[in-house]
Length: 281
Image (cartoon, rainbow, N blue to C red):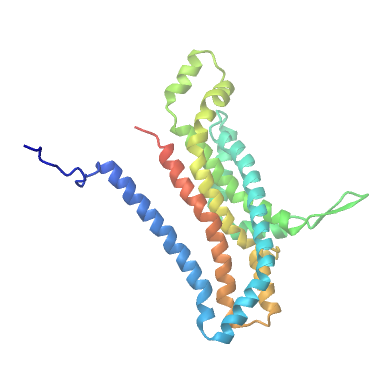
């Protein structure tokens, strides 16, 4: 008598955690696809108005793409420089917030809160019009270009936010680590640089990357003060084409698209790092 045959390809119910990961992945995937499709649709809907307008608008946009991309690269350069300057000064300011000297702690807190709650555009105007246009050293005159002042203006809110990120990361560590280091005769400086800050790097990295993404999108504010970045060049390109209204949507949608393609992967990787470095209570 032959043995009964059993089917082995029965559906298996995955554990709740794995199902949730799969569902989250599908949601993130469709989220990205939907945003990308929206950018493509918004940049191309004008082309479907009529055949003649389609060829003209598309050809015009393609002609100006190299110039717009060069302006976008300048946006990236501004974001890198402003982030580097803001991170350097903000780290010092954040360490000042945990200082044992009341004057240093109070002044660091005040500077952090002032620039953290000030409008970015106002700070940009502040740096643009209150800083000198050139430095006269007597024997030589050194110009102070607008894009450098834009970097300084954008680095001010970055500095304040990095300061708060540093302070929060240090405060999130258990106080027992300070006490253990003190029992081993570590000085406060040794405890900070050898024990506390190395552990804070993982906690600070996700919000730091999120701040960089916000800063990159905010670099278009430099167009208001005349810096030749992508938005400024877009306006100049439209003016060179005679101010055609049918080019507004495709040109500005193209700018939207390149910022999305640059910033969205950063945002997704930030979410990944937040989950990877999440503190288990």
